[in-house]
Amino acid sequence: MTRAHVLGLLVALAGCGGSPPPATPEPPKTAPPPTPTAAETTPEPEPSAAAEAPPAKPEAPPAPIAARPLAGLIEQKAFTVKTALAEKNPNDAATMRISFFDRPVACKDLNKTGPDGSRWVTVSVPWKKDSFELNTANAGIGTDTKAGPKQQNVKSGRAEIVDVPAKKGQKGKIRLRIESAMGDSVEGEADVTVCD
Image (cartoon, rainbow, N blue to C red):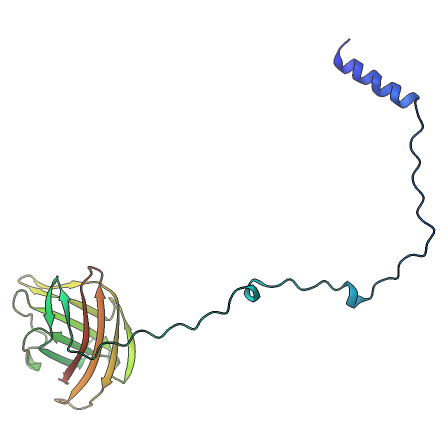
C-alpha cells in the first residue's frame, strides 16, 4: 500500500465514525450594542506627510557681492579690471552687453580682439537696478588668443546693477560674481562707461 492509499483510508475512517463534530457556540443572550453615529464612525484623518515634515525654511538670500575692485582668476592667471564698457546688445535689445577688460580699451575698440593672453569678462543683462542670475547663456569669461577669443562655460554667477546712467559717456556701477566650469572665478565691482 502506498502513502496515498493510507492517507485516503485515514480520511475515510475519520469521516465515518468517531466523535461528533463540535457544537457551534450560541451567542450570548444580551442586547446588541447601539449603532454608532456618523460622528463616531468617521475615521481620524491620517496625518499628512506635509504635516509631519518640519516647516520649510525660506530660501536664504544669496551672499552679497564684495564691493571691492573686480578681480579674480581667468585661465588660472590673475585678472584685474582696467576698463568696463557697456553697449546695447546687438542680439537682444532688452539688454546691455557689459565687457570688462584687464587692459585699457576705448569704446571704438570694444569689439576688437585684444592682444594674445588678454583676459575679459562679458555679461548681458537688463540695464536697470536689479540682481540677475548668470550662466553661459548671458555671461562669459575668457582670454584672447591669436586664433580669437577662448571662452569658458559659466557654472554660476550673479550680477547686481548698482548705478544705471542713461546717457552715452556716463558711468554706471555693477557688481559681479562668476565661477566658470573650469574653476576660475571673478568677484567685485566696477565702474562701467556707457558707449551707446
